[in-house]
Image (cartoon, rainbow, N blue to C red; front, top):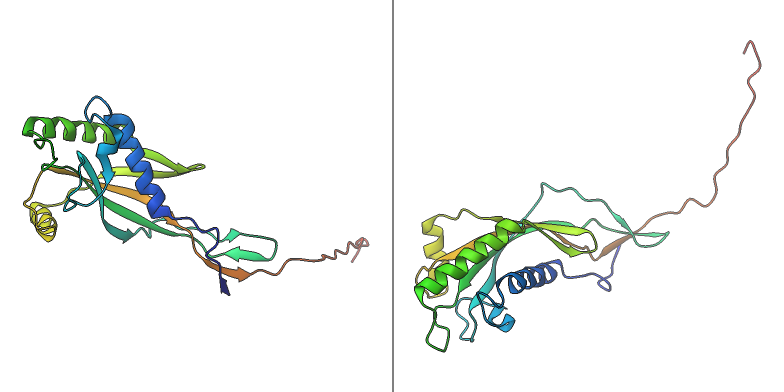
Length: 191
């Protein structure tokens, strides 16, 4: 058994970029003036943005079974690990130039919900789809989460992206069948 990190992609990073691209495409320029104002960021970042997308949890997604992947005639890559990602999509209330008014925040959040609802599936790479769905987090969880950022609870959209496949770096040798021998015998009557 060995390990080969070369050629192993970043499923988590690719998924985040796809979600970012989706929101930029759907929210700009009608609801958010510039694509650069939608970022993969954390709620405590002191940056100039309107909408933030923050990955706050990664969980096992064992409901999906996967198989080994052939690398060559003699090598097999261990099966990928399926995970689900939890995202917080929020409006930056401290945006530099006067902040964002409550009505604007509600309008943008409405469009974020519509975007997820209208796009429950995103293609991450050639034929590999990730499903987006809403998370039903309770208020206590939300207060604790925002409190961990030293921020008061604010309206946000909680999303799940799954399954996200994390390609294994482990390889194993697989013996190749070099030669097969078949014998065919004619069966005599009465035998």
